[in-house]
Amino acid sequence: MSPAADRFPGDAAEPGRAAVVLLSGGLDSATCLALARAAGYACHALSVDYGQRHRAELKAARRVAASLGAVSHRVIRIDLGAIGGSALTDPSIPVPEAPTQGIPATYVPARNTTLLSLSLGLAEALELREIFIGVNAVDYSGYPDCRPEFIAAFEDLANLATRAGVEGRRFRIRAPLLTMTKAEIIGVGTACRLDYSLTVSCYQADADGRACGVCDSCRIRRAGFDAAGLPDPTRYRTDAPA
Amino acid sequence: MSPAADRFPGDAAEPGRAAVVLLSGGLDSATCLALARAAGYACHALSVDYGQRHRAELKAARRVAASLGAVSHRVIRIDLGAIGGSALTDPSIPVPEAPTQGIPATYVPARNTTLLSLSLGLAEALELREIFIGVNAVDYSGYPDCRPEFIAAFEDLANLATRAGVEGRRFRIRAPLLTMTKAEIIGVGTACRLDYSLTVSCYQADADGRACGVCDSCRIRRAGFDAAGLPDPTRYRTDAPA
Image (cartoon, rainbow over all chains, first blue to last red; front, side, top):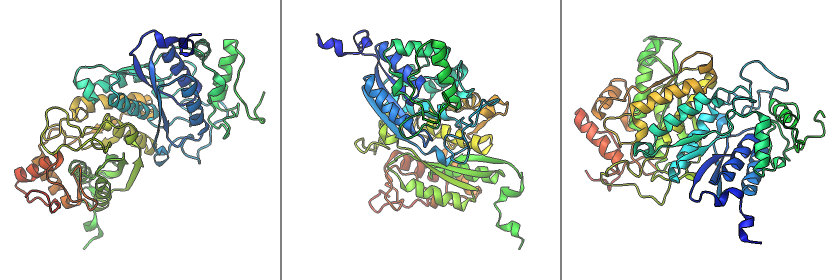
């Protein structure tokens, strides 16, 4: 058996392509990394520890980065609790357990703007020009910073904000999941060898990463596996509804 | 003597106006805060501890926020050292002590994008719509993220990125120093009661905030006081050139 058999399928395809990939440890960002790897990118994963409630996500990010063969994995700490305003960073705001109208309490003010800013800084420091982010504007929670016009505006900003942009090298913000349904995302990720049991989507997972089954994120995820006709490998807490 | 005499001149002018003000503790951001206060804004100052070498700046930010009567002052910690790529965050890259061509080594990748993202999150959490930033595109170090087109692009992004933007409330990024010379900035700040001896601009100030007198930032600052015809109150290290 040749050593090549140990490589990820995309590794041989296009040598020299590299990107920064934002990796939360949830289903979408893990799929985004799997897709970038399958497409032949050497991937520098970036996770941000922003004081989120679901810290099991960060452990999941480490497992996913290792299993998909990321070249590097950085975790940047930033205390968004000092800003507050979200059920994910302020312990006094409860996580909704039923569908809500409009933008839900789990929205973190300017989160994706901040995450993309940090990934832009890393891309510039590493002299890379592509950034992958697993945002999705179909089966999602209605956050404003998951829309295609937001991604396009950030790409424009990136090219004004940076030394590379001034020097004429273009940054690209890649959001390959943007228009996929959750079922399509799960299908693509499965084809790209992602083991979804490594990922954690739940907003209130326990320390072992077991999911509540009732928050917005759990409901969307579970419906995605149903729609994809694939078994749901999510590890649920014993008190989660069947 | 009436209690009003203790207030800042702008306090009585336009009650109810409030803004987030990015405050590094350097000359420009301190002037920006003084100007916003004089214009009648209640100001929520935001400083970011991003692992910068010149930590004396953060102490200066506290002094300036207190002396100008900011309503609040938050310091958010974020480890940009994990990204590197700048003389200000990577101890292995020296601070230039002579003028350089192009964008200097003190450029921090995507710094203002990250700072504005954090201030946007705070503004949204506090339900404020105005953000002041002391960027300047005249007597400056040539950083790409100090240009007017960058500020305009961030304002557009802010209105796509946020709940407030979706709901039709506009954010405004205010950069009142953008087209001023350093001498003009110092003149305005002095008129707005700013005590510049509280501020620290030096990239390699000592722990007491005393300036080196030779880095890019020191040179621009000193020339500004000269051009304004005002005495330079900067506290220099004993080894700084006269």
